[in-house]
Image (tube, rainbow, N blue to C red; front, side, top):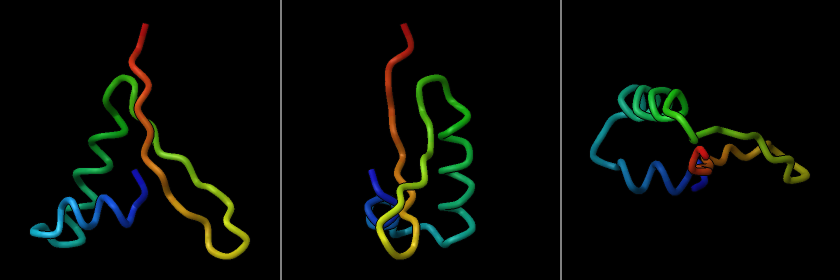
Length: 52
Protein backbone atom coordinates (compact mmCIF):
# COMPACT_ATOMS: atom_id res chain seq x y z
CA UNK A 1 0.00 0.00 0.00
CA UNK A 2 1.16 3.50 -0.67
CA UNK A 3 1.04 6.28 1.91
CA UNK A 4 -1.90 7.78 -0.02
CA UNK A 5 -3.82 4.50 0.16
CA UNK A 6 -3.17 4.33 3.91
CA UNK A 7 -4.52 7.87 4.31
CA UNK A 8 -7.73 6.90 2.50
CA UNK A 9 -8.07 3.70 4.52
CA UNK A 10 -7.56 5.55 7.82
CA UNK A 11 -9.32 8.77 6.82
CA UNK A 12 -11.23 9.01 10.08
CA UNK A 13 -7.98 9.33 12.02
CA UNK A 14 -5.96 12.51 12.21
CA UNK A 15 -2.39 12.70 10.86
CA UNK A 16 -0.81 11.99 14.25
CA UNK A 17 -2.94 8.89 14.76
CA UNK A 18 -2.19 7.64 11.23
CA UNK A 19 1.54 8.10 11.84
CA UNK A 20 1.23 6.14 15.09
CA UNK A 21 -0.64 3.29 13.37
CA UNK A 22 1.90 3.01 10.55
CA UNK A 23 4.84 3.19 12.98
CA UNK A 24 3.35 0.33 14.99
CA UNK A 25 2.57 -1.61 11.83
CA UNK A 26 6.17 -1.70 10.60
CA UNK A 27 7.27 -3.06 13.99
CA UNK A 28 5.22 -6.23 13.41
CA UNK A 29 6.94 -9.28 11.91
CA UNK A 30 6.75 -9.32 8.13
CA UNK A 31 5.82 -5.64 7.68
CA UNK A 32 8.16 -2.98 6.33
CA UNK A 33 8.11 0.56 4.96
CA UNK A 34 10.19 1.47 1.92
CA UNK A 35 10.94 4.71 0.11
CA UNK A 36 10.60 4.51 -3.68
CA UNK A 37 12.21 7.03 -5.98
CA UNK A 38 9.64 8.43 -8.42
CA UNK A 39 11.71 11.07 -10.18
CA UNK A 40 10.28 13.71 -7.84
CA UNK A 41 9.39 13.23 -4.21
CA UNK A 42 10.00 9.83 -2.76
CA UNK A 43 6.92 7.67 -2.22
CA UNK A 44 6.45 5.62 0.94
CA UNK A 45 5.03 2.14 0.47
CA UNK A 46 4.12 -0.39 3.12
CA UNK A 47 4.94 -4.01 2.36
CA UNK A 48 4.05 -7.34 3.92
CA UNK A 49 5.91 -10.59 3.40
CA UNK A 50 4.83 -13.40 5.72
CA UNK A 51 7.72 -14.63 7.87
CA UNK A 52 8.80 -18.22 7.25
